[in-house]
Length: 439
Ligand code: 4AD
Ligand code: MG
Image (cartoon, rainbow, N blue to C red):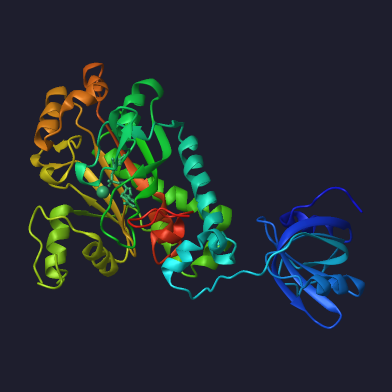
């Protein structure tokens, strides 16, 4: 037998040749004197055909799904073959690891599926989601590097908050109090004078007590920060991010995306052709909700007032009607964190933007940052935060401040939109939610 292993995605290069393939038996199907194994190795699927004497050994051990095997044989072309138009005509095989079959019921309830997620990942659907996720992550990096950003890896054990105290996970860091980070934004800001435009792809944590389709307790946060820009530049930056990354992802794995979401091409079209994106101020969104009977609380049919947060459900109702991505801009100052910069022409409003998309709602939170030392201290005061632990952040306003801004995008929310997933859970390797910290 040949010694070298060939990965499945490469097999088309070996038509007429003998190969050695390792894989998991995705399915095992038998006939009287034939057996068909769909092999899976993470790079693709291929059908191996065993005949004659080879099926006797297979029947003898009663080979089941998910067993691992090594198969030797010849690659033959067959247009009708479901995978890559080729088949592997086996002449020898070995069992590596036995399996009793896969005990996963595709229709099991969500909780059971999450308990068994380590096995669910072997399915075609879940593995397609994780493949797209890997490619999407690469495309975000490609986007940033093509624009000459530098990547950094900030710590996730911190002693400062970014997005309000109510969603902080607290822990003991040796003898001191610490938190799990909610956002790496403040650290990115400190790197502007060192590296210029920067980004990071890091885990963020939110002690979210609401169980919604789009909230996780731990998520992958793609954040970037840019110096010497103004609010209009920032709006164009987030729009360009979505359009460029989505185009890159389709270029790399359009077929896989269409397999997961047959309507995916509409997304590509809307982000690349419908530019500039629709813009609505926070005030216009409140008005829109009230005019379209989108209620703050559907039970009491209470209307929104200025200063109310447009939460999960009403936000998605709004986007359902609008049908295209929206840049929601200029939130009231009292709704935003200490770092949000005020609008020059209305000090009650901020230079902030959320990117909202149909089916999900908010996928990006973004703002220009307060760049004035005194104003920053007022921001801490307004939020009741003791500025002492923020000395390193405040120093940025003392040592050569500049107009700057940035954003954070939730990777799982982007994937939920792109793949039309029922929730962010399906976009996660092992989701962390209230009451779920396993597997
Ligand atoms: O809007 P957020 O809270 O903004 C920030 O954290 C800023 N400091 C980011 C920045 O400017 N660098 O969060 C940003 C994004 C949201 O738009 C959403 O996509 C995602 O992070 N996100 C969550 N995703 C999943 N589960 C949660 N609990 C999330 N909370 C926020
Ligand atoms: Mg937000």
